[in-house]
Figure 1 (cartoon, one colour):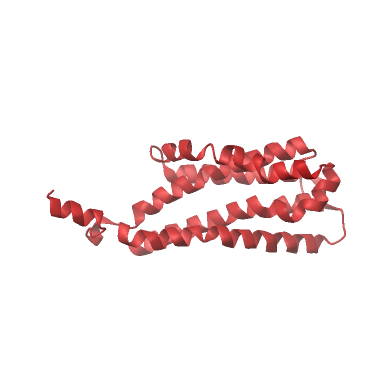
Figure 2 (cartoon, rainbow, N blue to C red):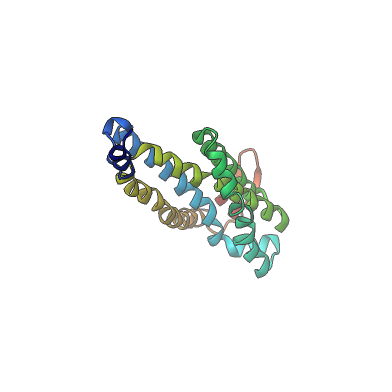
Length: 201
C-alpha cells in the first residue's frame, strides 16, 4: 500500500466496497439508539420517585443523593475503560446484550428493594450494566461507517441520552398517574407491591 492510499484511508476516502451497506449501518445505529434510550430511562427514573421512596424506605436526603450519584457512578466510571478493553477483544454484540440484561435485572431489583442498602446495591448494578454499552457501541459504529460519515452516526446515537431522559419522566409520570392514589398494587408473581416499585418494573 502506498502513501497516497494510506492518506485516502485516513481521510475516509476508502471505496464504498470496504464498508457495509449504509442501510445496515443505520439499522445498527437505530438498535443502539433504542438501547441507549432505555439505559437512560432506567438511569433517570429514580428522579420522579423521590417522595414515595423516601417515605417507604425511610431514607434521608443524603442517602437519596448517594442513590442518584455515587451508587450509579461508582462502577459506571471505573468500568468504562476495562469494558472498552474487553469490547476490543470479544464480541461487542454479546457485550451489549449482556449489559442490557444486567442493567434491566438490576432496575427490576430496584423495584424489589425494601431498604436503602438493597436499593443502593441495585443502583450499583444498574451502573455496572450500563457501563458496557457505550464503549461497545462506539466501536461497533466505527465498523459500520467510514470516518467521513461516522460523526452523523455517532451524533444520532448520542442524542438518545436526551431522548431517554425525557422519556423516563414521561413514562414515570404516566405510571404514577395510572396508579393514582393507590399506595399498593397487585403484580403477578410478586403479589402486592408499592406503586413506585411498579415503575421500576
